[in-house]
Amino acid sequence: MHPAPSVIVFTTLSGLGFGLLFFLGLGLPDVSGWVAFVFFAIGFGLAVGGLLASTFHLGHPERAMKAFSQWRSSWLSREGVAAVAALATMGLYAAGVIFLDTRIAVLGWIGALLSLATVYATSMIYAQLKTVPRWKTALTPALLMSISLAGGALLAGQIALAQILLPIAAVIQVIWWVRGDGALQGSGTDMASATGLGPIGDVRAFEPPHTGTNYLLRELVFQVGRKHALKVRVVAVLLGFILPLLLIFIPYAHVSVLVAVILHLMGIAASRWLFFAEAEHVVGLYYGKR
Amino acid sequence: MTTLPESTTRKLGLVIDLDTCVGCHACVVSCKGWNTENYGAPLSDQNAYDGAGSGTFLNRVHSYEVQPLATSEMPHPAAQLIHFPKSCLHCEDAPCVTVCPTGASYKRVEDGIVLVNESDCIGCGLCAWACPYGARELDAAEGVMKKCTLCVDRIYNENLPEVDRAPACVRTCPAGARHFGDFADPESNVSKLTAERGGMDLMPEQETKPVNKYLPPRPKDQMDHAGDIDILAPFLEPVMEEPKGFLGWLDKALEKI
Image 1 (tube, rainbow over the protein chains, first blue to last red):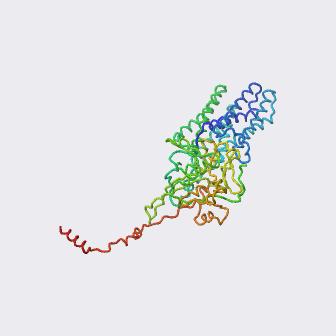
Image 2 (tube, one colour):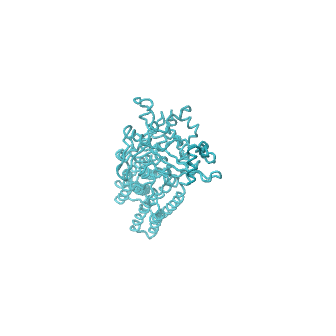
Image 3 (spheres, one colour):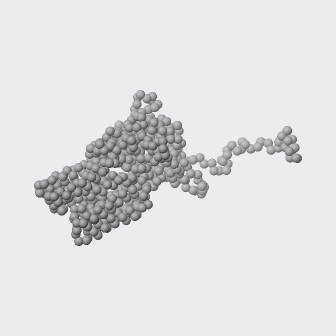
């Protein structure tokens, strides 16, 4: 799949933002006034910034409001609805905490759940697609949610929690990669089933339908850069999980946590790039590119 | 609403005969011609006159080489070249429809055609991700998703002569490799063809239940036995071994020189 920068930025930032909002909704850390304002501003900035980035890849962003209508069937629509609900609920809760110095706990819990639900809906947009065997697994929501929670805990300064959540996310990440590498082969979809010509013999793409490229090849059959996949994986694990973990074991200091957050974000962006760049869409089989 | 209908009254679709298709791409051209100037946004091309041309097509013809396995009778079987037209299969369980966040994609209850309401499409591309067949292409100029409409503006069009009320690809195919009809009717031409020739689904494991069926290529004629190689050979045997008359004299005269 084409690793569109808008989608990588969106899933990385909004995942981290909603992770932070989740902990803020639970009252972790229990802050008020200006400190709370800064925390909520970061959470909202990341979540909203990510959502805005996601509209950049639309053909008609001016019609984006229509995307809230199909929540009964579409995970993309559910994501939009959940995101707005989470942001509205957390907005009310934040106003109480910042301006009135009153924490309406129930509102915070609902906001936290909705934040988590938004990340789940995002992950299901990918996990629902049978056409991309690497994504079509319950491990995909587990991966995106564990990363969101680990990053959120890190950003919320919940060091003890981050020390547990980061290794969990790292393990899920590695399992997701190992499973993903055999996913296309295990899916049962190959050139024989794609063309139905398998019963005659070995099928080979002889001529593509056109001499140039097309939307399908650009969007779904991305292949450049996969040769560096292993190196990028190592970078993603080092930056995303191992270095932040080492940094937060240093006696607690704001600077080291800040560096840990930045490294974590860079690592997750690398992991998210691979998430798209390595994902094989079965339509590539028709072009003999799998 | 982007949920799928429980069932459709009719199941309009195509039968594509892989045995007959000669790979001329006439269906590609006629499809682009009709659909760029009728229903919905035109099918745009980008950089059509330089080296990096690209454009939107609703129907494309691939070509595959299939190498039959060697047997003791046929140690070196010849490979077969199979032309493979591919357009929307108007699936019963169309994954492209249910993923649509705006309700722009829908499957019609009356005839099962999968369509895009272009004024509702936000161009997110998720339906193209959900389709295993590559049947949907986002138009680079219009920013909306384009797909085969089964020429919905031809098949019911009473301004056209009846013979033309078929999808442009079917109407134009010079080899008769494309057939249009109602799969819900067991007596229709497409149902009968599918039954007779073992019409198959593409990627059945994706569980999309495609309506369109593909007829597999028939086995090729075999002419490997010595006597079969040239059935006309006996008629070309020399009828006279020894020349007579003038040619006989010439033959003998030339021998002597």
